[in-house]
Image 1 (cartoon, rainbow, N blue to C red):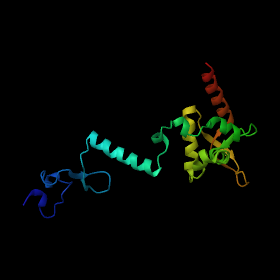
Image 2 (cartoon, helix red, strand yellow):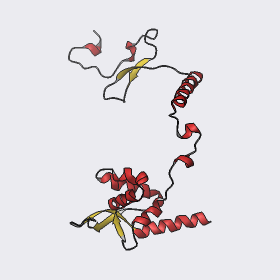
Image 3 (cartoon, rainbow, N blue to C red):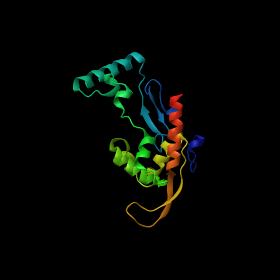
Image 4 (cartoon, helix red, strand yellow):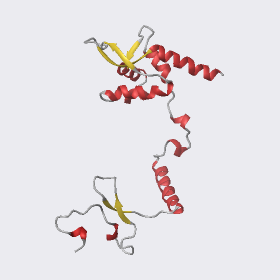
Length: 180
């Protein structure tokens, strides 16, 4: 009896020595993809074989008429909708509102450009606020606690938001950089 088979003693880990190279070529343990190690089978594909597979898939998609984007020769500029986040925020936050909650801005942006910002507005809970916070970071815009009341009325509260002046300053600095 081997030490790992001693009664009352648990074995730890998986042993790749159970595979026989001639019989089990390409078989191994996949660890980390699932809670428990899993036996998987893999195949070695060299570049010429991979290119044949890719060419066949391309031909099938072309025949079916399902090619789009880069596969049709379109560039990112042709396929990606164009928008200016900072200008859009200035458009939905009037000068009369010095500070605004992030969630209110996201909802207004979604009304302005549903195709761009609609998915942000569909986020639940704090994810909506976090989305705007994340996309504003590269512009140096920081969020802060903002006191306000819901647009439909209700009890006031402190929530994460921004100041309109920070947006205006970021636009001014960005545009100065473009002019030089």
